[in-house]
Image (cartoon, rainbow over all chains, first blue to last red; front, side, top):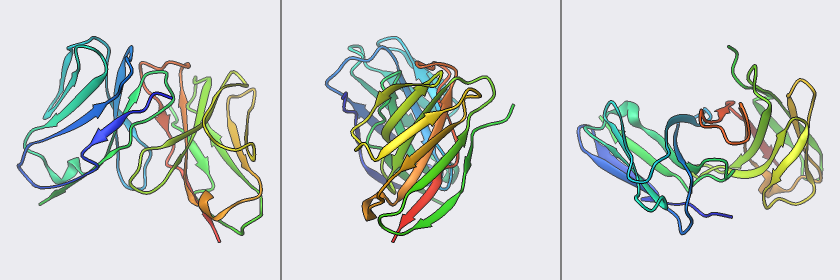
Length: 107
Length: 114
C-alpha cells in the first residue's frame, strides 16, 4: 500500500484568499492525479501530472509534481465559493486515494 | 456519452443482512473499481475488475465480493452487514487499468446499516 497523506485535512477560508494543499508519500509515483468531490457527487478528475517538477495550470488552480515524484501540491488563487469541496490526490494505477482535504470557501 | 450510473442511490439495511449494489460503467470503459467512503475522508479501495477478472483488492474482508459482467457493468455484494459498513459506496469506471484520463465516478450509493 502506498500511503498518500494530504494536508491540511480541513481548510476554511474567506473568498479571495489563496491556499495550498499538499499530497505526500514515501513512495515514488509514475504519475499523480488530483480530483475534486462536491457534496453528493463522486470525485471528478482535475489534472494528471506525469513528469517530476511539472507544473500545470487550470485557470486559478496550479498543480505541481515534486522533482522526486513523491509529492504534489495544489495551489488555488483567489478562492471562490465554487471551489468548496473535498480535494483528493491519487497515484495513477495505484488504486489508492489520499486522505483528502476538505475545503470550505466562505463568501 | 453516458456516465457511470449507480443504483440504488440510498439504502437502509439491518445488521446481518446482505446487500447488492449495482454499477453501469461508462460506455467504452472495461475497468470498474469500487470504493467505500466515510464522510470527509478519501475513498477506500475495495477491489477492481478488468475485463471480468479481479485485478486488485484492498484491505476488506471476504464478505465483500464483486462481479463484473460481459457488458462491463458490475455488482458489489456485502454479506453479514455490520454497523461500520454504513458509508457511501462509489463505483468508478475507466478506459483501462492505468487511466491517464482518470476514473469516471458515479454519484454513489449511501448505505445505512441499523
